[in-house]
Image 1 (cartoon, rainbow, N blue to C red):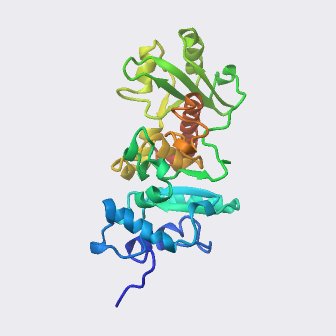
Image 2 (spheres, one colour; image 1 turned 90 degrees about the vertical axis):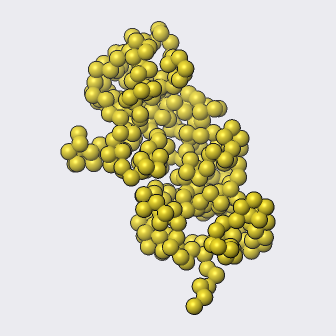
Image 3 (cartoon, rainbow, N blue to C red; image 1 turned 180 degrees about the vertical axis):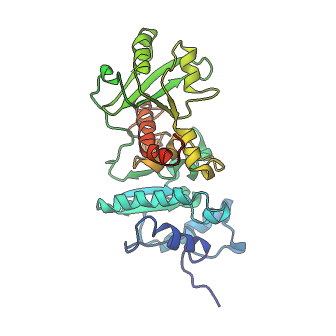
Length: 324
């Protein structure tokens, strides 16, 4: 029996229809599924080089819509990868489709790009010139941006004062520093009242130490171990006296399968626990908002916010499992 020329009818289609769409709450939502290449390639393998470019170009004549027809574009992994990696990335893809649902419920039309080929075709500018192909779909999964520029990555700026960081029940700390010298450049802090960011100076040492000393618990992402923020604090004459919570280690305990795929970075954890778009990589022509290249202070503050929100989200589960 011949399989009809419909997109995603094999294992990837089964994963999408039965495991992803229902768990994302998207059953009943109108949607169209399309393949990047609309024919069946020889050997069931995606072509490369000149053949790939020619095939993709040939298939564009059958497209009824383009990215310009959508309000928001979102990048995720291809569902076929779930079958290849023993289901490990499934929670990430489900979470991405939940983000698509969030945007749909806001009245926006959403284009979801699944996999490297779709991202390369419809969002080639995400191959950032500084890294080229090193920034692939895994770096961008969960990220979304609006055609009209209305979605700006990064936490909203707050009017929090540094004195409001004292006696925090939970204090998130994020540091920007040189890996060669361990010298601090930026300090980002966040608590239940908001956050602050300031350029590091030895003149701030006493005030920062007092904030650290009066915190009930301190949250960092990848704060422990070699080449960590704790090591940098010590190098700059600062110490921690409060319980330290490392969100990367905590997420490893809750999602151990993600570690094998390299998905324990701050962006992955934040994408699972918040609805924020990706601020961790420069977005090239789409770059507005917090950015490590163009807006490092905003970037630093958003890192501190993200660790705080991750901890806020996972702390009940850690307590329920008896880890805390």
